[in-house]
Image (cartoon, rainbow, N blue to C red):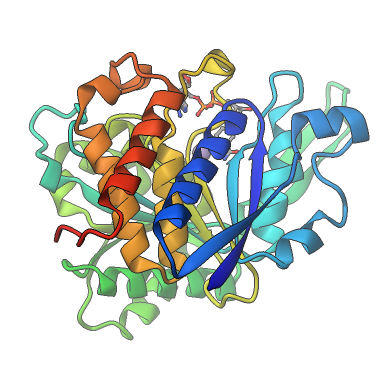
Length: 364
Ligand code: NAD
Ligand code: MN
């Protein structure tokens, strides 16, 4: 029997609630499967670790992760520690250190979810946002000079490398090619940012030649936000820089019903290093410890993890269980207008996985 070694990094806030829920779903799946099992190792990194050790994770922490088949991550962010310390000390350290350069964020309106756009049918909104995940606006280059003095100067330098841009755009085109519509929109801001973003556009035009069957267009990031709201069906695969995609994917999640639903995969496509899967939401300080966290974003991330591990049937089985549960408004958490708790939603998804074990998958 195949054993997958999974690192669990719950992090902070509701990460500590939704990641154990994700583990329960994987355990329910393993109980229903005979061909594979999971070996979990928990890494208690994050704000509490920082208070004890002065860093978010140990300096050699990446070594422990390298030995895993995949990582399930919750959230980094603590009400008492500055956000740039928690983000850079944990999540970015892992994504950049393990060269997970493709951040993939699918968005769909799941059954039973009341999404905010009035004229948008569920089939009109089926996007996947591809976010450059290792450089650009998040390169970390820059600094502060004359700190604390009236003449203080601060810079954040966006760094785009030809190799980095080319590999994320090729990943995006390949993904677009694998989807039924073969449609790609490149998000840019080359009217205002006249160096790196112009190179970004030029490289896209070159990469596009390798994919003659993919239809593609270009949209400025500001216009892209309006297009997502006004013409959602005109979009399918969206490729954008680190910062642009970060913002667009929160908008996408909100348009699909809730930030609590959206999943993410941080992929190292060459599979030299393990990839990392996480809900797109953060630590949600306002609801932590109350059992109100929607675990669906984590469960959908688990689906992406199973797909990455090549367990396509298992991935579809878990996705069907999730959709079975979202279709029932009594199993909606508060962010979706319901009263269900994290534990109730988790139990329902696990029960559905158990109930459908061994039965044929319904075709989607
Ligand atoms: P957030 O995603 O934590 O919360 C935004 C709003 O959405 C809150 O009202 C919250 O209650 C709600 N929400 C989020 N997830 C939910 C869920 N699963 N179920 C129900 N409601 C949910 O974003 P924020 O408030 O901007 O950030 C809080 C902290 O999290 C900050 O420290 C931030 O840096 C961090 N953060 C981390 C990540 C990450 O690690 N990937 C991502 C975003 C934010
Ligand atoms: Mn974000």
